[in-house]
Length: 145
Length: 131
Image (tube, rainbow over all chains, first blue to last red; front, side, top):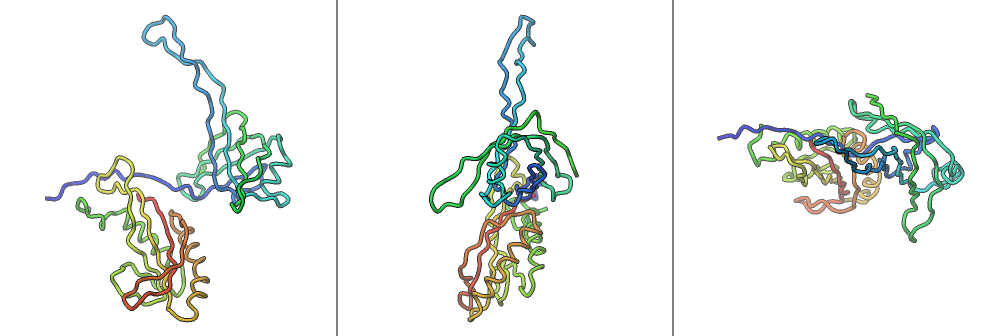
């Protein structure tokens, strides 16, 4: 007897291709990790005397940041040089997620503040530049195609 | 529709293998071999049977989530073996990265255990999500 199978096939993707620009300069080639972090704190749980639906949480401010890891590039205009020179400056960012997959290409854009990275590491290990750039407001999310 | 437990007919795996074959077809001069049972006539690209893993809740027939393939780049054992391996490895890795949704994790030099004796080979580790 053949059992009729219901086959809910999982839909999944590898993180494989993105396009990332800071101040319109493309740093995708150097990037090895990215996270659009939502650090927004949960509000305080609060009650009123109104009965069953009396519970709510206080509103909190949006707090996003871009956590990025690059292979260090200290050439003039390279990502490490760029972050140090423009420390604390505000720059536009654009991150295209799954740009090569039709129907899943989405984009985050906005403004973030550049931070000079911590520099250094263990001997004989590939040099990396890791930064967390605070984002102004909420990242603008758009579906491209 | 495959019977329960019969992973050879799992659509996800079959699709992944045909995707790899399609990608590797762009590598010139190498024949693609999909069975480790046959003697290999190098130069050849051998797509080994995948290591499969299951995560998630839906193991209803096609719940396999990830396949990891060893792809052997097999060449003739002669004085040019290392030169040929070195010149072809980038094309194979590029073809897999460019033409499949999977990722190349890396590549190690080794030998392919052909019935006629070990042959020089590069072993490319390739992972792809199944769906």
